[in-house]
Amino acid sequence: RSVERLRNLDNKKIMYVPTKCVWYERYGPFRDVPEQLYNSWQKTIIRNFPNIILKLHPKKEYSDSEYNSFVSDFNTVKIISDRQFQECLNDADVFIFDYMSTAFAIAAATSKPIIYFNIGLRNFTPLGLEKIKKRCLWIDIDILNPGDLRDKVMSIKDKECINEFTDVFSLR
Image 1: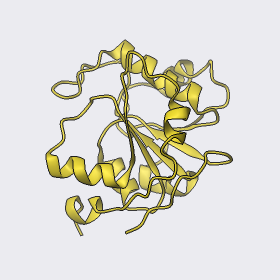
Image 2: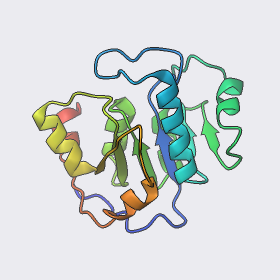
Image 3: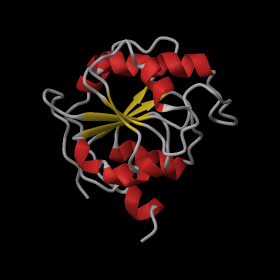
């Protein structure tokens, strides 16, 4: 299935869907990013995409006030914590992920653009990697020096994405 091309970010509602719990746990094999580094990475995303929507994980292990404190420097951030991801699909025009999850599989089944910032949180199978890269605007990121994320996205904004991921990896 074809996917809408991003073309631009102007007037787009962008939703960032981080992995569960941003700073309280070690992420384990293939998720081993120190908590403060992941925290800093999330702030980089927020700085690069003003007015972003943060969709918190439903199994969050922190309070809304703790997360509100985390984003307090960014008064334009909208936080969604009280709904499941599939209930929020119409709240966004574009999705940002840095982690493969159930929410990613749900987003992939839409025709909306997905920006995937590969910061090394997963170890993909060759087939999985191929299908994800076809579905997304895939950008490899050095988490210690991410650079201008918006410029990186705009450099591939016209990429034609195709959803082969859903047919291969989702149950019907």
